Image (cartoon, rainbow, N blue to C red; front, side, top):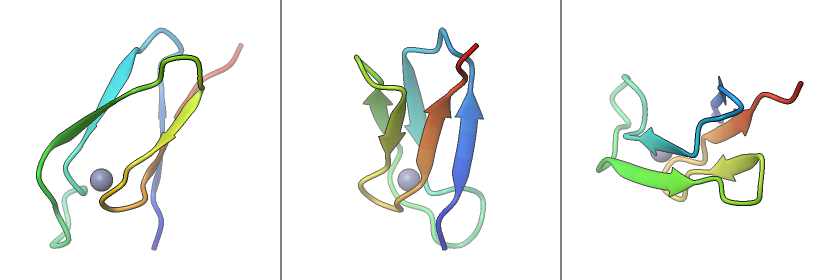
Length: 52
Ligand SMILES: [Zn+2]
């Protein structure tokens, strides 16, 4: 199952550890850079930056 999380527009990076269920993974960080979304390579969780 894929999870999604919306973060503040000015946030440069996100951290993911697989969430709080039993399918966690090592803590990893992703930078948005030029994009407004990143996908965790471990668990597939999508992080979106808010757009005004
Ligand atoms: Zn993850």
